[in-house]
Each structure stands twice: as C-alpha cells, then as structure tokens.
Amino acid sequence: MMVKPIKRLGQNFLQDKNIVRKISEVINPKKDEKIIEIGPGEGALTEILSESGAEVIAIEIDKRIIEQLKANYPSIRIINQDFLEIDLTEFNSSELRIVGNIPYNITSPIIFKLIENHKIIRDAVFMVQYEVAKRMTAKKGSKDYGILSVLLSYFAETEFCFKVSPNVFYPRPKVFSAVVKINFKKNLDESLNKTFIQIVKAAFGNRRKTLKNSLSNSIFAQLNFSGCGVDLSLRAEQLDLSDFIKLAEFAREKYSDHLN
Image 1 (cartoon, rainbow, N blue to C red):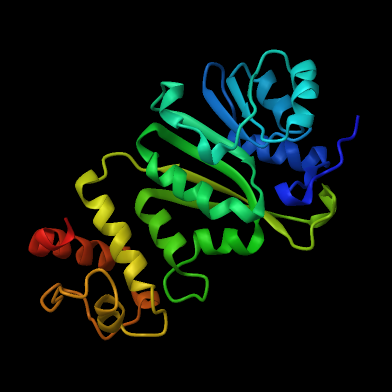
Image 2: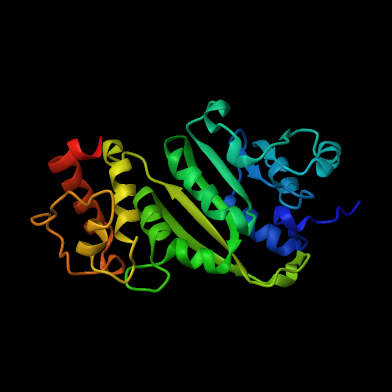
C-alpha cells in the first residue's frame, strides 16, 4: 500500500533499489550492531538493515506507516516519536549507529543532536540535501565553509559519499541529494567542547567581519584575544580547525571566569 507523503513532514520516499543498495554498502551493517534508522518511511532501507542481523530501531513520526512497518519487518523495534525528542542514552550503547533519509527542514537540528551525544555514537550515514552535504564537508576558504563544517571537523571525520538524483524519490524533490558519512572521534578534550562551539558560533556570527569584530559582538565581548596565536584581522572562513581550537583553548584557560 502506497502511503501519500506529507509535505509538512518533509517526506520524500526513496524508490530506487540501486540507490538503496549503494547506501547500505556505505553503512555496511553487521550482526548485533545497534542501528537507529530515522524516518524509515515505507521501509526501503529498513529491509536491508533488518536482514543484516543488526538490532534495528526505527524512529517514525508518521502514525500511518507504523502498522505497515510492523507487519513487514517484525524483527525490528519501532518507536512512533520525533527523533529530536528522543533521549539517545536510553538505548544503553556507546556504539550507536544512526542512519536515514533526513527531512531537509530538520537536518541541522539532527546533526547538532548527534554532536551533543557524540560520546555514545559511533557513526552516522545520512541522505541529505546536496547543498547541506556541501556545507557539512566544506573546507576552509569555500563559500560553504561555516559553523556546520567546522563543528563536524572537530567532532568527526565527515565524508561526502555520492550525489543522488531527485528522480529516485516519490514525490520528486526540487533539489539533488547526497549521502554523507560521519565518523565520530573518540578521545576529545571534553572540557573544551562547550567553549569550542561558542567560539565557532561567535566567529561566524558576522561572517563578513574580521574575527576581532565578530568576537567583540558576541558573548566574548569582554575578552581580549590578543596573544591567542591567531590573526584577528582574518575572517572566520579563513581559519582552519587548529585556529578555532587555539581560540577556544585561549578563552577557556585565560578567561574561564567570564564564561560561567
């Protein structure tokens, strides 16, 4: 039974078995792994995941699809809830794998949720809008380089896998998609994470301004960054990951009292 996609939920159901196979090759699901699938829809990817022997947990917000998924894939656990409202710690794993064809309108909130929970997530494989995939994997100096690419480069190794045509979906979206893999890093300096995120957001807060101006218009307005080891006359898009880490370490060590 074909379910009519709901525009408000950003539903575009994947129809092409060849693309499903390519995505599953990137995921490479294994027996006994714990895999959370966001928005399984009619189950194009769910079928391959369930056959792998992995423990599959499908999170689906659309009540209409639940019974169909239960009937077709009795071995998987199905949760009828918004992924953004789920507490990922309830799955009792430090090696969660997260996959899905992500609704375009909530891609960034989903990625920020994964970053917040990075310690219990091994990796994620997502189909996202092509423009977002470029922002996720952008390098210094490009127009797509921004908060998303810097935060992902700090917390993970992110790989652009392949581009996907609108023709493989129902309904057909107006834009191209792409598959991206995010491998979360372990052994981060957890005490730096909060300050690092604040620094990156502040630095890109006024994109066309110099770092000095951007930081002085942020929560770091009272802090003097001279001596931090980074050229404050540069703009945020001209900095690489090591520069942002230097700024965050400087802010934490010199001025931690201001940030509490």
